[in-house]
Amino acid sequence: MLTNVTEVNPSNLHAEVFALQRKGHRFVTMTCSDLGDGFDVLYHFDLNYELRHLRLRLPLKEPLPSISDVFFAAVLIENEIKDMFGIDVQGMAIDYKGRFLLAEDAPRAPLLKTVGVPVDARIRPKQAPEGGQAS
Image (cartoon, rainbow, N blue to C red):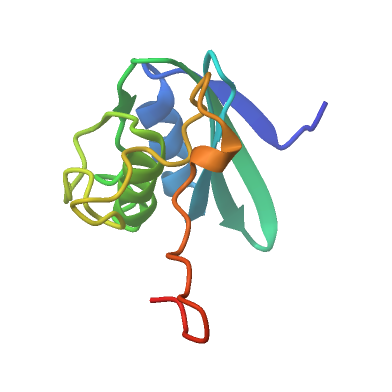
């Protein structure tokens, strides 16, 4: 088991993030993995070139509290996670409403595991006509 990872939950996330900020940690980024029955959300912080991580196991359909009121830079990755996984991130300093990275006609939550969707159903570039280039 890694000693630099602390397990948190939605109710104590904000307090843990604030404690790291008070100790001088800087927010690096967040990562998210779809586990099928929920999400594994990792928060990454740095202090003097040593990383600390907070791990939050988020059940499906549960909202994720924003930490952008403590670390404003988190608003970027929180909006990305909202776009890519469809997670409801609540309380973001700036909320792009699922359109931070995705266009209006883009597939919703493209990194979300979707049971029963075949791989060949993904969007493909248009086929080029004979002797031409794809558009």
